[in-house]
Image (cartoon, rainbow, N blue to C red; front, side, top):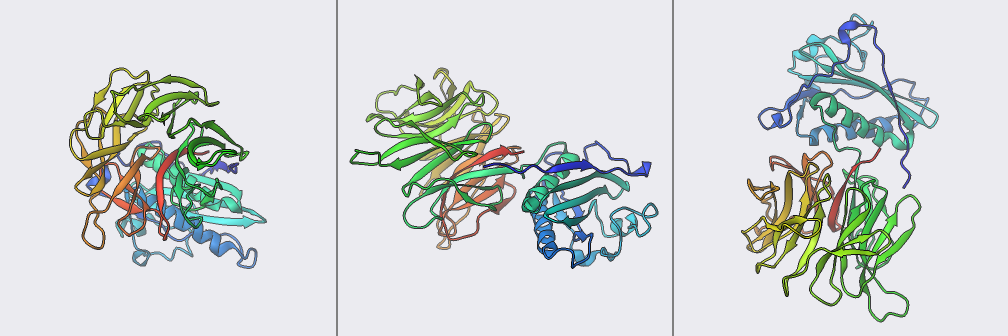
Length: 460
């Protein structure tokens, strides 16, 4: 899938008092105690209504995307537009007296705004330009001023880019809004499950496999250009379908069969150096974890029992190829363990619950999320990489009052969020939670089922 390039150009300003600032305005974690009040008037359109028939829909799409991104970030509470003291359609994007029809900071401090975003856009042919100004109201200071330009088809991507830039300007850390998610889903119809790729907020969902079978457990390559997944494919001459692993190149659409040993070939986890894949292979015996090259050559068996034990779901630390988390029932019940990439130094991290599975590392490798079963359902937990300070993220119930199952966690590229699936509505839908469990939001909102979502890095 070829990504469209968006041109970014810094705006220039004549007033020295409005110089951009590289200071940190919101400390990470500060939103737990107090959200910053954000004023965000509707986008202004720089052009006549007759110059483009698409301007209303394009403007609404960018405005709604930015609003959703910044709201999900958990740092902001948006001020209701009915509380605004200015007619924002008649005031400029920059303050008076520098701009003849400029706005007054007093009008925004009076409604309690900590930050103000003023933005407008124009459309020329098939291109859209978004002009943005983000201000710190109490200091009457411009924090970020940028113009973004690209094809109309990239309007949402432009909005996501701006949202990322706002978070980086205010917190010092880029947001996750240019990331994507790969997931197995039945949204194609029938009993089959296919692999899809979509934006982090579920927009632009694109089916990338068409096996008309059960395709599961997708995983991103480190560069975001390939996806490894397992599909029950019936090979020529075979009587039964086998759980084979394939590698899909998103730009070319070419797929390669890379592991087709009889039995299970599943649970791909790429090493961060992009040179190998960890996976689970059964070969007619109890499943163990192996290391494999992209061409399917086995580079070593990483786990070896003990006798009768199941070792599955390898997860490689994104920043350190030497650390691997996995699930194993070697002590009787499936629990979360870590080990070195060569299978040494095995440590058990979880001891409670009936069944612990699907470990996922945070980007800095300091945290591990997993699904833990207690009673008759699973919940999502996050713990330190040594098993300490466990936090429960989910506790939702179904309409009948029974606990909902929440499974298959995946960290966002900035480490602030955990994505997972939940059947609380009757369908397996995608949700995200802040990594501390303080806020939760639904991502997909349809009548399909989703399984094992994996969050990518930001895709430039």
